[in-house]
Length: 328
Ligand code: GLV
Image (cartoon, rainbow, N blue to C red; front, side, top):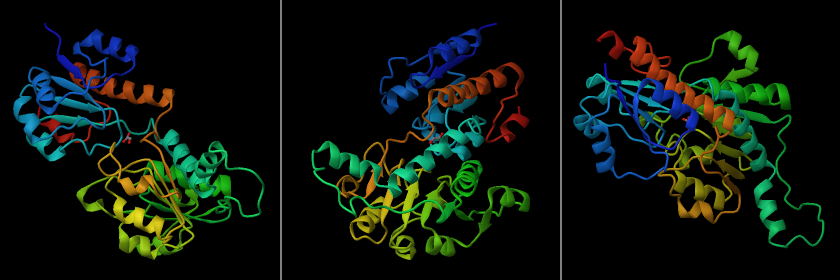
C-alpha cells in the first residue's frame, strides 16, 4: 500500500522529518521558502495531510483545491490560522499542540513582564548608545513587581502558569477574568480571585493577556479599556495580535495613559504598527514566547504524533474538531 502524502509547510527539526518519513511520503520545506498562496494550494492538491505552523492558513479557498486533505496538524497551541468551521464542513481534522509549551510560555510572559516593569531594554539601548555617564536617583526607575497586583485576562493553562509564578514566586495578589470561572481548587492553587473585566482593568498593576484570538476577542483591549487602567500600569500581550488595538496602545503609551507595555504579538505581524517602534516605553519581541529548543521540539513532535496517530489508528492526540473522526 502506498504511504499517505504529507506536506510540511516550514523548516522543522530534521529528526522530526526523519520520523515522518518512516510513515509518509513527505514533501518538506527545509529551505524554509516563502510560498505564495497559489504555490501553497498547488502543493496541497495531492496531499493527505499537512504539518502547519501558526502562520500557514487553511481556509475554504484552500480546502476547495485540497480535496484529498484529511488532517492539518498545527505546531502551535493557537489555531486562528485555521478556519475550523470550513475544515469541519469539509471533513478535515484539525489538531493543535497544547500543554507542551505551557510552562515555557508562562516563563516568557513573566520575563516580558519583568523586562517591561524594570525597563530592561530601554536602559540597555541607553547604555549601548554611550549615554550612561553618571548615576542619578531616578534613572530608569520602573515599577515594582513583588507585592503588586497581577491581572490576567484569559485563565487557561498558560494564564494559570503565570498566576502561580506571580503568587508563589513574587507574592503578588492575583486577579483574573475569563469566559468561565475556574473551579475553587484551581483558584486556590493559583491563589487567584475572579473579577469582572472592568475590575481587572482598573485594579491590575501588571495586566497579562493570554486569551485566544477569535472575532469575539478582537480588540478586547482598545482605547476605552486602556483608559480604565492605572496610569502606572503595565500591559503584557503574549496572546495574539488583534486582541489589542495596537494603534490605540501606541497612543496610550505616548500619552502615558498607561506606563509601559511588553508585546510579543502584533496585529498583522510580522509587520508592526510604525508608532510602536517610536515610543520608548514598550518592550518588543518577535513572537518568541514558546521559543526554547526543547519546547519547540516537543511541539513539532506532538504535531507529528497527531499525523501518525491519525493515519495509523484514527487516533490523533489533540483533535480540535473530533466530530470529524466520529463521522469517518
Ligand atoms: C504560539 O503562539 C502558539 O500558539 O503556539
